[in-house]
Every structure is written in structure tokens, then in C-alpha cells.
Length: 410
Ligand SMILES: Cc1cc2nc3c(=O)[nH]c(=O)nc-3n(C[C@H](O)[C@H](O)[C@H](O)COP(=O)(O)OP(=O)(O)OC[C@H]3O[C@@H](n4cnc5c(N)ncnc54)[C@H](O)[C@@H]3O)c2cc1C
Image 1 (cartoon, helix red, strand yellow):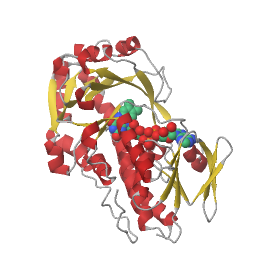
Image 2 (cartoon, rainbow, N blue to C red):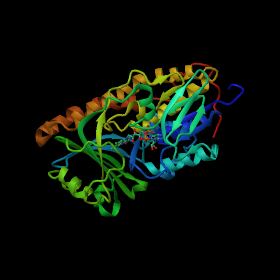
Image 3 (cartoon, rainbow, N blue to C red):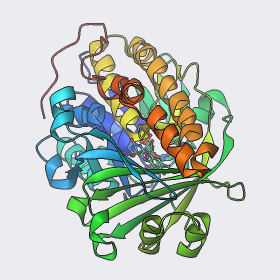
């Protein structure tokens, strides 16, 4: 580490921004996280964290506390929209730990966020600044300066744009993005367990597939809640936001011909939200001098491989390791980070998009044809091809070059 501790600015206190902040603090950096929201709240319901992500959380020193907030999924299954026919996809639980070293978790986003926030504040009480909306930045050979909406300027050595799909930092670096509406809308909501029949309490992730739509649901908070995500092809809603409310009736209408279990799940949602799914082509570069991007800001993806937040976690760990290993030349550290992350994240973005066609295939309209289709597309070999490379990635061990100093522990 140079004589003066490098000061790292992070725009955005989402899962990616907080992961990176914690990983940097654990390595001795001074961190300032600029978050636009006046307070950190509950957005986004639940998300799945596969072994490659829970490995990152363990590296942050959160491994012991995770079992208190996360549900360990026993497995995954596929169900057919019309008949409810069920196919076991794979075992998780002990198998995930045995194969990849870490569990497959189902986590209520606000719980993980709160845990990460607490650790960041414990490590550095002034690390997070709320109500601090970044609107642009400039850089020179000595550092970066972020401009906030209120006119204030905040100076640091390096800037990390972790400010999500609508990133202002990305816009300042590369201009407006090329987002295209995919023709799909995602419904999201939480269902209290008591509103569901017992066969829907199972501790598994379920993926319903059907022509033009699919549904994912899984338990959260030890099964007290079920997280519902329903993706449907429709073109009349194009707002990409965590906080746009919809109605149960509108959601029911989108899945009106689907199996009773799906109807039952939707009827139990307390407040459904809808999110228009936009896609962006993978970026060829996301680093300029002393500024780089992380998470959805540089590789937002359709949620069809459940890897968006997990990629943000991986980014945070790899980026912190790169900066620590190249502390004498931080800009070189940023380039190393980008080189390590571009190919994998692009492959995930493209793989997720390919899953839309797989999950929504017109062949699924007919139950007999659907059965053959599922046997083909979800056989053991195809599933291994699609998921093995994702779950086995180790962000804590990829070769970051440089001097690779020992990490400071939690
Ligand atoms: C329906 C759906 C289901 C999903 N399911 C999964 C899943 O199961 N598993 C998974 O891994 N991923 C999933 N994802 C993806 C995942 O939610 C995102 O990839 C993840 O939240 C990205 O994290 P992030 O930190 O990059 O961005 P965000 O979580 O969007 O955080 C960005 C932060 O930056 C702040 N910000 C924005 N602009 C500014 C600014 N100008 N200045 C300062 N702060 C700013 C925001 O307020 C926010 O706090 C899903 C997504 C959707 C839509």
C-alpha cells in the first residue's frame, strides 16, 4: 500500500457497491460510497445466490451470519404451465457445498443489504453517504472528482460506478446506452406462506415454463415468504424500475390460462411490482483511466440465469483484489479487473438472453410435445453445460497479477 491510503469513491450502495466497499476496506482502502437514496430500504424482494456468489459473501467475512438470513435451497425443479407436470432439475443443499464448496442461498434482498451495510459501517463509520446523487465526474492524472446533484464535488483516487442499470457514471464515460426493450415484463412479489397450500411450501426453486412466459418461485426467510417472479411477453409496459407498482388482477390476467398453483401464488401476492426487461449488448470496455464500472452499470442482464447480483458480487471481489495487488498503479489494477471480467460477464448476458427462447418456447403449448422438449433441453448433460461453469467460478482465486498482498481480515 502507498504511504497515503488510497481513497476510493463508489457511486451506488446496491449489492455490488456494498460488496466492493467491504472488500476494499478489508484490504486497507479508504472508501466513500455515494448513494442517491435518502435511506437504504427494501427494494427488489428476493434473489438466488448460487455457490459462486456465496463464496464471495464468505470472502467478505459474512459466512457465519448468512445462515441466519438465508434459506439453503434443497434443489431446483421445472414445471409445465398447463398440467403442472414436474421434472427434478438438480439437487442443491449438501450437493452444492460438496461440489462447489459453498451453499446455494435464497435471500431476501433487504436482509443481505442490511447485513452488508452494518459491516461497512462497523469497518468505517463514515463510509456511506446517503442522499448523494452522482451526476457526473471529471478526472486528471492525480485523481477523480465526482459531481453531486447539489453541486458538491467529492475527490478521490479512483471512481467505481456501481449505480445500476441507469448508471450516470456510465453515461458520463460513454454517453447514453443502447438499451432495447425485450418485449418482456417481469412481475415480482412476495407471498406469505400461510396463503399457500402445503405442497407449495417446498424448499426448492421452481421454474414454470410455458409458451410466451415463465414463472420462478422459491422460499425466503426460512419459508415464511415465497418470492414470486413471473416473466411474460407483452409490449405495453416499458418502464425499467424496482418500484413501479402493478395490481394482482393485472398479473392474474397475464397468467390467466396457467395452472392453479400459479394462480394461487399470484392471488397471495401482497403488492406486485412490474419491471420492463431491457437488454443491452455486452460492452467492449468499461474502464477509462481512473474510473470503472461494476454490476448492472456495465453488464445488466435478463434475469434468466439468476446471475445479475452474483456477477456484481464477483466484480466487487475481483476489483478489490486487483486494486490491492496493483496499489502502486491503481489504473493498471482497473484494467486488470476489466480484462478478468469482460468475457465471463458477456457470456452470462448472452446466455441469459438465450434462455428466454428456451423458457418461452411455443412447443410448450402442447403437453406431449412439451414433455419431449423438456427431456431434451433439461437433460443432465445440457443442464451441466449451462450451469457448471457459472457455479464453479472462484472470484477469490482468479489471477489478479501484481504483488497480491495478504488481505486484511474482517
Ligand atoms: C425480476 C428480477 C429478478 C432477479 N433475480 C436475480 C437472482 O435471482 N439472482 C441474481 O443474482 N440477480 C437477480 N437479479 C438481478 C439483480 O437484482 C441485479 O443484477 C443487481 O441488483 C445489480 O446490483 P447492482 O449493485 O449492480 O445495482 P443495483 O442493485 O441497481 O444498485 C444500484 C445502486 O445505485 C444507486 N444509484 C443509482 N443511481 C445513482 C446515482 N446517480 N448516484 C448515486 N447512487 C445511485 C441506487 O439507488 C442503488 O442503490 C434479478 C433482477 C430482476 C429484475
